Image (cartoon, rainbow, N blue to C red):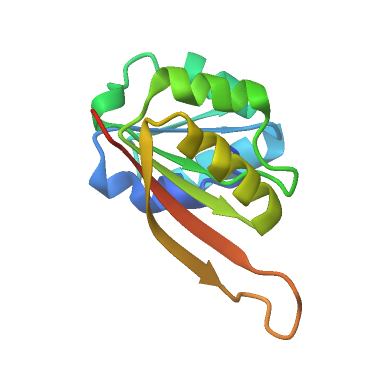
Length: 145
C-alpha cells in the first residue's frame, strides 16, 4: 500500500493476503497505522515510514506474480521514479485510487503505454456531494504474469 496514510487499504485487505506492507512519508501516520492494526488484531501488516518510492525496497519477500499494489497518491499523482519502479517490479494487479482525475489520467496513460497492463474496473465515488471533488478507482491487471 503506497501512500498508506493510517493504513486503511492495507488493513482492510489484510485478511485476503498472507502479508501486507504499507509505506507513508508521515511517521505520525505510520504510528496510527500500527495502532490501527493492533486495535483490530491484525498481525500480518508491516508499516514503514518513507517515500512511496521506498516501498519496493521493503517488499523483498513479496512475489510480484501474486502481489496486488494499492496506490493512493496525493493530488500530484505518482512520481516518475515511483512509476519506473512499479513497472520494474511488475505486480500482478495495481489498484489506483485518486482524488485528482487529471493526474490519475496522466499516470494511467504511462501505465498503459508500458504494454504490460490492461485496465479493468473504473469506478468514481462521489464522497463529497455538491463539490467538484471525487475519488476515482482504476484497476490494472498484468497481461503476462
